[in-house]
Image (cartoon, rainbow, N blue to C red; front, top):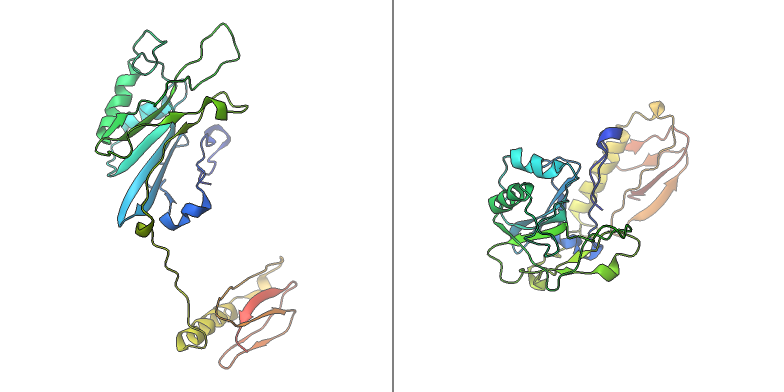
Length: 259
């Protein structure tokens, strides 16, 4: 899950993005170094040697996120999707609405700056459902897609997936070629010189810790997948050929050590 950390009670994040762990090899990253706003989440990921971007937006009834985007000068290459709840009713995407909203002009200008176009769903459904029978359901959740993509050109609205929510999920499939995903795994060779060097470095780092000043229980776990012995030490010394680690605190240190 990616979400912005709370800054204050008046500036709590109102968005989150969940990424399936099976996509971890694409190295998704939350890029708040580029956009740091509680209602905008920008993620980057790697595929086929390139960086791609996904943006999720929540723009409240005051259109805060749209206004923030309008005043922001940032260039993002390879943004493939910008989607979210924009809280804008407009006849351009909602046939049941007969008016044009001026704030939608700002939204289109933002999309154009990212080389995005407004995606129209395969089948039209409302995206916002109201319990008040005096008001009509509406379409305020939108998706903008990259202009030069032939494979990503439309999305699906699933009103039957909303459960207790008043918003219907939007779905789009992004094709990813399996051989383009790097799944290489790096590890140290068992009983090699590099393995011994690494273990000695770890033990040396621990030996430099000022343990008498540690007053709370701390557990350090070092996981080395190289067949060494996992030991639990209770208030005694760890002897190594070159260094020793004196344990002088209450608690325990769980570590992988060289024997």
